[in-house]
Length: 165
Image (tube, rainbow, N blue to C red; front, side):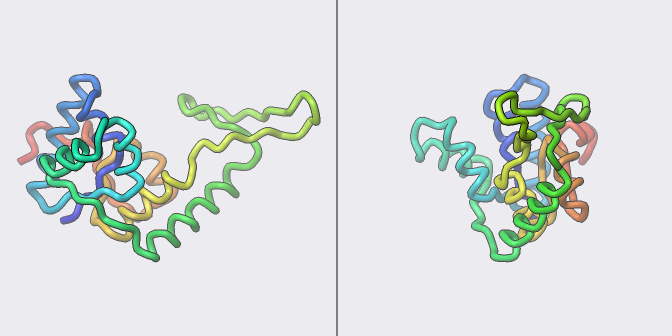
């Protein structure tokens, strides 16, 4: 069983609140006990911002048993397809990340609709990598990934029972 790991799980482990850090540690320990852990180059880059030197990040990944797994052509293609679907579905409105309400915003100068990108292509690369090159994704953001990658198996750190063997 290969588990792809999302950035948010690793950030929880590094400096999250105690409940999130504990859940992330348990989920990673369980996943490595069931197989291998991988991360895509996007997750590596997002983590790199929090480390002073590359060798510190490499040691962190080594200690967790994580390896960087490059993108296959199929994963890159699937990411592009999913992002296109998102861009078409998103429309010209912005969506509140908390409650999901949608609102339109008009430029006060030219009266053109303004739309913010709420998910950029890196989010889709992480999901497509997990779908094509792993058996599941360990993330704290299951709703987004299930929307755009419905066949992706998802595990969440807080969704794993403390009694799970």
